[in-house]
Image (cartoon, rainbow, N blue to C red; front, side, top):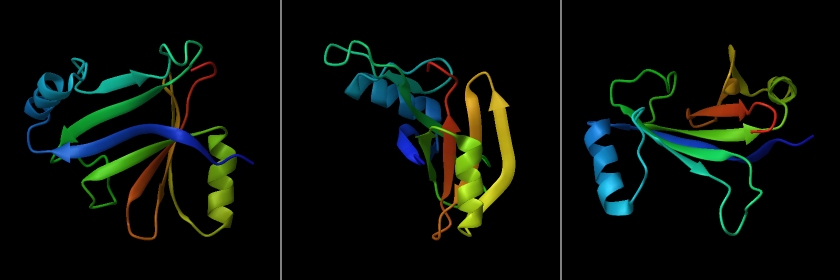
Length: 128
């Protein structure tokens, strides 16, 4: 069974996400969107048929989205079959969070690693 198939996103806390996004836009040329982050498309000159994106997004320092972790970041991994992987991780004794979300953006689940870092697992919608 496939486990993680790639990085879906990098999320981190910032004192001033808008100002930080503006800095990255000005100095690194990131196309920061009104929602506050960037979606890097996998399609390009070297990969014209590429499907998918990797997200970069700063969060408010007060965000509780990364809880129960106290880390100021969270990595999102793309997965092929979220429910199957969560079942395997539970069977292996991992700290799998009970909550699972299913939305137009795909399916999301979470596991906490042995050092307390919350990891987001994302099964993109078909064809994304």
